[in-house]
Image (cartoon, rainbow over all chains, first blue to last red; front, side, top):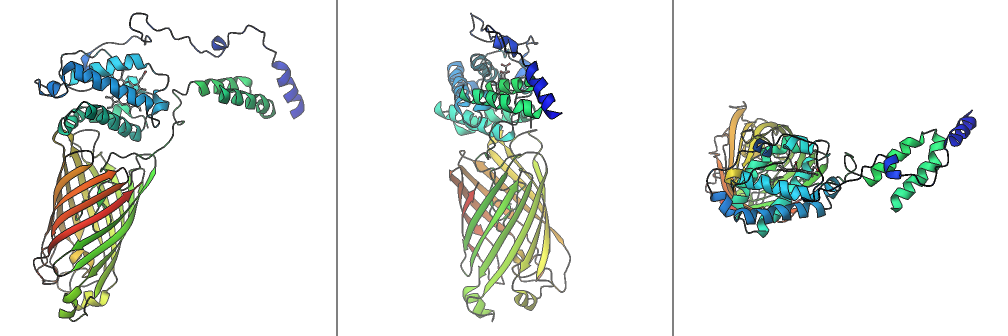
Length: 176
Length: 307
Ligand code: HEM
């Protein structure tokens, strides 16, 4: 009985012809980056500064402490770079669009620090859904952000003030 | 490439035997190459933010030096098990206190702790007639459960809240009853709320404790005249100077069941984490009057490892 079942299964597996497009066969979609931005297009969504997940600081203090838009860009890009290289969370970031992330993270930080940007990315809940991130991963990310801020000589009290805007997002960015 | 190939080969061999449709294998090959959206395949690791496992209180629970906090020992987060171990010494004018213990943290939810306290009465022992250098010893078994909230994350206005119980067993029942204590063992119940107010780099803790303990239990529990639970208060405020360094102060009220002038405790502490796994704490502690010997102020020193 088992033997016949096995045999018939084996027979059903026809030898594949030579020129099979395995990517198409397995549903692997070709990623086409936008030639202008270098980003992989995402599903359409409504753009809104509220997607940043926090109200911005008032006044210029925080923006200045973070070295203005240039300083914030350095911090955001370094932060993304460290995250993609961190063995603890590499697996979660692997395959995601680093080019887009550099831009949207910068926009989010710049918007929250009131340095004169709009945030055009997705909201925290929908952009982190299904990533499988855990609280330990959030800690890893916070440590990486602390490192990026430290490298730009942001004083620790100001680092914490900025983190106070991000910390309440935990319920949206942690999945399990 | 190699793991994918291997996986595919395994599928080829196993699938017919197990009567598995080949399409299932194909999907697994796919997920090998695209590990995204594959919740559960990432490495587990322990990574609390530095110092958020707190230090070890004298009774072995995670907290400040003299007060219990709502924090959970160990460096695990919601999906792991962590451990913490400490050695503490307090050098006082008339006494020498030493304690050590371990605590287990489970999923940042449950804490189980044990501490052994050794209190050297030095010359006071002779003066009290119990013997020069008489040692008062106590075992403390603790359990703490985080009810809700997070010390760092979530709603800024919602602290991490935990309820704890500590079973304390004095190993010197004879001395305890000689000074008038009603029992040589007792249970403390604590309710704590702790929050790191990131916008100010300030950590705040408040704890309410139901207890009968005399000098933490080292002089027994309750007294013949007053054997009821009293509610006591513990507070701590600390400023975070860096990821590794905090400076703070603590306050703890205590009952005076024995009428020996037992007073409140107070300290100023500095905690430093030179590495992920090590925390050293130094404090100036004012433990008031102990067994009628007043002015017990001195140095509190602790080394703690956590994983
Ligand atoms: C409060 C903490 C966090 C903040 C402020 C934050 C911020 C952001 C922002 C602004 C984006 C871009 C959304 C877009 O481009 O539309 C993003 C995407 C992403 N985040 Fe986070 N994030 C946080 C925590 C985490 C954690 C804990 C993880 C997991 C380790 C994570 C992994 C990712 C990944 C993989 C993406 C790319 C998603 C995609 O390509 O679809 N983030 N995050």
